[in-house]
Image (cartoon, rainbow, N blue to C red):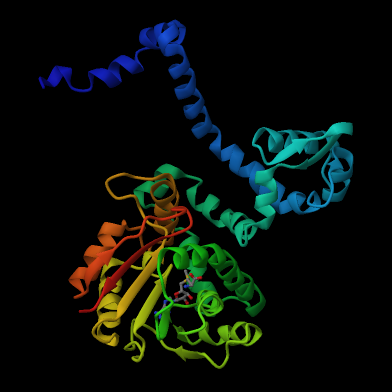
Length: 364
Ligand SMILES: C[S@@+](CC[C@H](N)C(=O)[O-])C[C@H]1O[C@@H](n2cnc3c(N)ncnc32)[C@H](O)[C@@H]1O
């Protein structure tokens, strides 16, 4: 294509004259309106997120779960002037989180009710205050000039730097949000024939507890940092799993992984770490498994050559703010596994890519 033709389509669409014509022409005006709406939604997305954040911080969805309430009632409960609460509630209706009811009352939409019911979602939304601050100057953020808060956040939580009650809140955030991850992982991968499962970076044991509830067979081993791993005991006791579970403390950076499992899982672990750390960890998983053993990786992933909203326009930024890891595609993860000596990569189609996706490989 001659150079002057390159980009002709974009230049044409960008021209004011074309836009004016296309907005009036019957065959293109619907398309122009939809494209305009999509662009406007992107530019307004920040306000939409703040409406969601305010509703959650005021706890309004939980207040409306049993019965609708008036603006005056909610304004008084939240200590917000009535006229400002009115704006927030109407924004909530516009974003399909709330519904206007008779008598000037407000209730929950189906999406609003799901917001209350989805485990970990409200906590995740509240936690976004850290990410908002990191992204406030987006140019500096993408240039790598921001000393991001998120970079210290999780190490501070899991490294034991945080006050125990605050650390417990954030461990709980991981555990709560694990519910959906475990659901989708166990739907995608059959662990019913597993004899012993080792969950590396298993946190406070939420994934193993879900496996224990789904399958009566496998023995369950959890490996995590010494300041994290013991927190799993209470969860295993409460779930009646203490006979089937073993908790092992250590660091996969410094220590070899415990042997004896025929399946190892890495749930939401790799995206926190650099390629070098991931390569070392995968090699340790390979060493620890017997021949025929499986490695299961489950975490939100990039769409690779087809960028996706969740993986590439959210998790990629989140992990970039963390500064230690990155969102990888299933192909990239499979390639790293092959380099560590694994074979036969399987990538089941994810049910909800914004929750998690899986890669399974074998040691042959
Ligand atoms: C994002 S959390 C995921 C926890 C859990 N798998 C889940 O999905 O809810 C990452 C986990 O990796 C653990 N971790 C980080 N570095 C580690 C290391 N060097 N050795 C062992 N575990 C580590 C953290 O303590 C934390 O529990």
